[in-house]
Image (cartoon, one colour):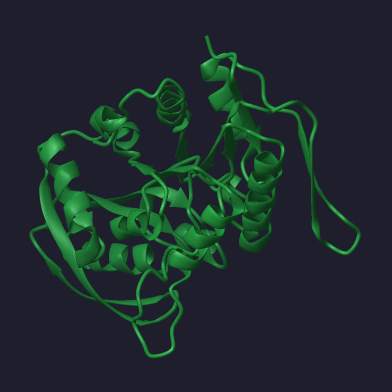
Length: 313
């Protein structure tokens, strides 16, 4: 039934791509993505894609510039090989944090990357938990922004019972935290913070009651873990008995693992939109959930031109 579908992977997250193929019951597309001796990305597509519905799975995660170039070159290769439709499956969309001008002469990299993907030849984008919803409007092609909510909710329902609070680490994540709290029957709290610079955050105060309660801190990504560690300290100081962290994208760069292990965080629940690096895999506090089921179902529906709106919960 899926004879005209071809799914390929770059080097950013081949395991997730293989898991998607396994759930769809198809073989991974044959492609070599390597480098020339000077570091330029070299792509070879080793099977016919003429007239095919092609999906390229590639998170633009570290090393971000390399993975982004791999994606662009693979899209270009498929376009020149006469693929019928090219969907860029980007579980983690990098460069998304600069999505507006917050200072004079600042770039809007989220829009720049959207233009690059479109210009390369992509006909559609499938992503997950974009850092800001307005990024969908930066594209001139259809964008399906899935949410890891069903996967994370299922885990929280099984492992967290009564008397816990969903906490948003900033005002921007209130809508996400409220949605989780409503589905779990949990109360809501918000952390008011002031960001002093890139990858730096200072917790100011907590809005809501966390005293004597277990807390689940909810965010879309963890980069250097400065925000969640400072938030955890503030929550414990306010009387929280236990703090866990839940996020979609485990970037975990720089001192993230050292900060997590040196904190009072009970566990960090993440998904496999980004593969864990070696140091993160050795951290026993990190629990990884897979989103391959969600992505494979979205791929199947896109292929059959079915509605994917029921996945946007």
